[in-house]
Image 1 (tube, rainbow, N blue to C red):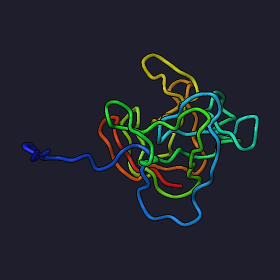
Image 2 (tube, rainbow, N blue to C red):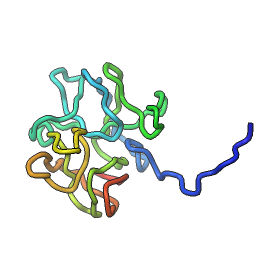
Image 3 (spheres, rainbow, N blue to C red):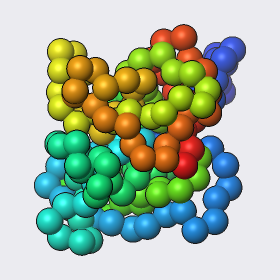
Length: 160
């Protein structure tokens, strides 16, 4: 069967894709109890080989690890837009370099990256990126800055 339709504008990336070739950037970690989407900030769990989404300020600023990397070897979720790191499965986490993430808010080039650690209103994905503290529901992730400008929430490159 032949392809009968073509997209005029393909997505530039998916959340969790690396945005540039990087040396010495990934560490392997084990996801704890719940699935974590690609491109989400994670912190150390009780075991050194486990990670989870942050639930406190200190889990972003003191024990934060980095962002989950997209693994295309895994089966995509139903909408095809992202691949989750299932509970109990290995996961790559980027500590330094460039990665694509989905943001909650507009972003500006060079702006500090804030990470959500408390659900608020419709923003329920912990570990997601935004441009401010959202009244103490998010905190700046040390060293991470935005490398793209967005007028509204969407895909952005961040770097450390």
